[in-house]
Amino acid sequence: EAKRIFPNIHSGPISGYLVLGGLNEISYSSNLPKALTKSSVNIRYRGDIDIPCNKGTTVETSVGGETRSKYADFNIAKFQTNGFEFEIKKEKDWLSFCAVTRSRPITNAVITRFTEALQFVLGRTLHWSVMELLQQQTQETRVRASLKNEKESSRIQPPISFRSYDNASNVWNLFGKYLGHVISYPERTWHPLFSLIHSVIESGKASLEAEALTLSVSIEGLLKREFSALAMPDEVFKKQVDKARNLIDRSELSDSIKERMSGFLGAMLSPRAKDR
Image (tube, rainbow, N blue to C red; front, side, top):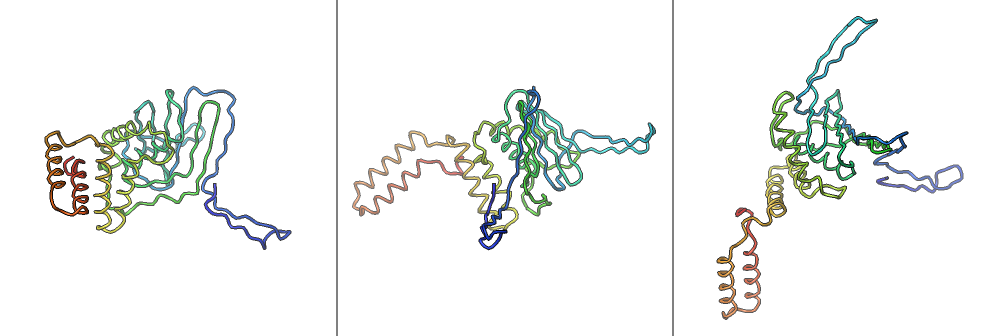
């Protein structure tokens, strides 16, 4: 997959075409000797990415059976939700995200839902660099030309504040709730709900005016999509609107004014954002 291609007629040993392209992603698939009983995906993100942890690791260095050094770190989040076992490990300049399941295939759409849920609970945009998928009798490795995930200066904070040693259960419970809500979405592209979330996260890097506008638009979009049946007008209100429409129709107002007022009354039958 290439973003851009530049044909150059003057290049090449025989004055032919030399095609230059910027590759977004390189992938390689191979067959395994036997089918796996579990499906797993490991996604690696470059950068110093903080997560709330609930498990630790110990690294011991031995020489000839003699322990020379021992190092302990509290750097892993491990939990189960929605039929998956997750292990997220913070390493030096890397974050490793692993999901394992016996109950369902890990499709491209499911992988996208994983990345959405992680970005949502951490309150930041992330770009993965390496992905390894093991499924049935296939091993697939993908490499992307992604920039290092630097610490952002966004004013938008995670939905649940955390430190590396605090609030892990609440954060990963929220991860599971979001994942359960969107995991059935079949498209490889972002879920419409995450498109709104991503807009809000990115707005924190812009001006306050842009952030306020994005927040208001995103909240209204969220209410329309996720709570479309909430605060609908009752029959009494609908009858009042019909009476108003009849009064306008019998009035001596011009047809253009009647048409515009009729449109306004029609809009009143849809609930306002503040009513929800």
